[in-house]
Length: 373
Image (cartoon, rainbow, N blue to C red; front, side, top):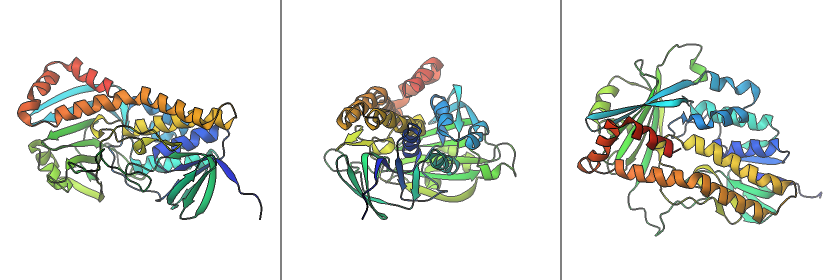
């Protein structure tokens, strides 16, 4: 029996966080194994909003023949916030992009393969033990690696998504589906109501582009307390303007959901394993930066590991560097977005002063958005 092959890096999870980490590490010369429990194409509960701050990074990660995904993405130039019977509009400068997860995940996976990553679908990570080398037990056998990145998401067998006392006080769930709405505009629209909110924006699929022009497909993605609504029609009914707007929509494909959505302090490191994306922390979806933070945290983790792969530092030094950089770069985003969410989640009489301020001072609205990036 020959010697056991040891990878430089094993990444658990093939979403934007995992693929970005795998691509960045492979581009530096590391031998990378990327494991994904599912397969593509797949829908995910996601706003499908990519903020301008991450478009250049995404372009650097995609292989040459995938970059048209950015060139043909719908630009999102306006944000509209609907509170009770009032609306607040703001420009998004520079524009964000609307990119469907059905296309984005597949493009990043293909780019990882093109970068030399050993990428395997339908392989579930069961357990991770040891330390440099780590032993990763999967549905396809055991593998060893010098380092491990957990990009398996907020609710996998590798992550116990609980509040500090082990009890979830309020059960929140995420819902998402695509609909046909020929009147959709190049705007991301957020409808807030007691116990939740719903985001609407136009989105296009690569498969649609040869057959349709303009905006027709929209993404509806909501976060709501489970005791208030358990389906998108029930969510739409929570806001009068959204209920009226959605009455003529046609469902495109099956809705998807995820639960519970758990808010906790970020945990970028655990037992020597670097956590990225939702595995590290669940960012409030309304800020529209989930994909961006996934890409940025994945690449940051890989960048911090490169000196270790090259023999310039130890694994503890690399993981400490990642934890410190993660908390410095992303900690303020989680803190600020959490505060804004709590304000907007208050009952109408209590949130009214904050909404009034946003309506009367557009500069404050832009400032709030900028500070949650």
